[in-house]
Image 1 (tube, rainbow, N blue to C red):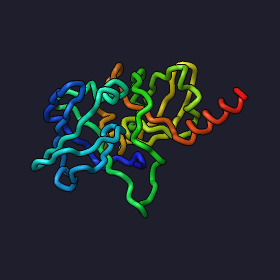
Image 2 (image 1 turned 90 degrees about the vertical axis):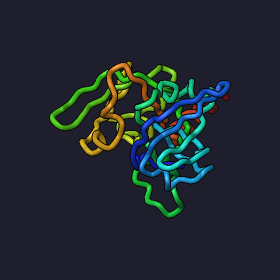
Image 3 (image 1 turned 60 degrees about the vertical axis):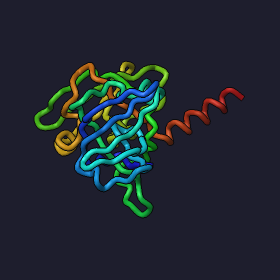
Image 4 (image 1 turned 30 degrees about the vertical axis):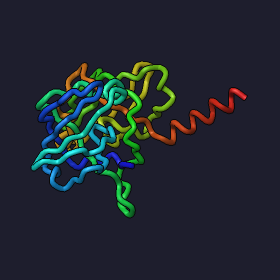
Length: 198
């Protein structure tokens, strides 16, 4: 379990394909603080550390993960947002994030607004019920508040600190981001759909 409060970033050093899996090695200042078998969110995707060597560590992404998320778009030099799992007793500064990405969507609009940023993302119709204005959403693992929703997508407003301390600042229009919708919204919508079917 995570909170969507990003601890730092990691840079892709190398990718090694093995069957349908890809072993991804990252360089990160927190590499030496990690341990093998630890869960760490990478752009919001919960992955298990399988090896550590100096300032680098390796995780393995399976085919399902590569297809559902933007981890399949990674190349050496790209960065991901990092968050280690929540510890019992920690403050919940963001919102409850599972590290289970629902979908990767396209960035449609990137608008700088005198020091802050307004970013709009595509929202496939099948997922429209999961997003509400002023609700929570995780974008590349970052806990954010939905600023606006319409028929074609949803928008978030980004403060300078978040822009400077996450990989949002490296995105361009057309890039894909990982989205995890609020777990409460998913459960509520599922319960309502089941009730309506009865």
